[in-house]
Length: 87
Image (cartoon, rainbow, N blue to C red; front, side, top):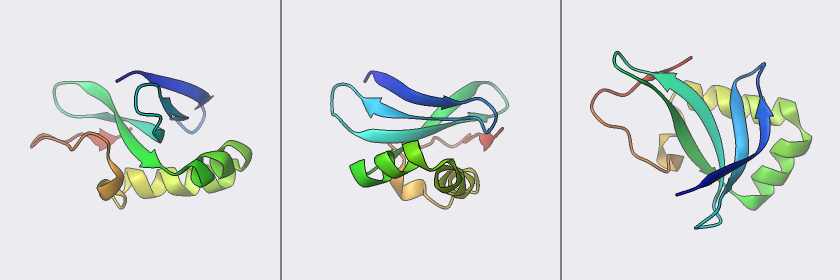
């Protein structure tokens, strides 16, 4: 999979983009476990993608839900047993 970021929000620590092979839209957030730092990718609809690009407040609300693990059903890669916590 090749993730292409269209928006990088360094202050709030998330990215919005599209996966090149499948065409899926996503928001990603950085997380860390005791061994490694990595990103979690959450699939979003095209409608959400367009909204989040133009409305940072809406994007941040979604990101907070992801950090609180409330959108796990949208994870593109399911977490392992040593799942990280949002930074």
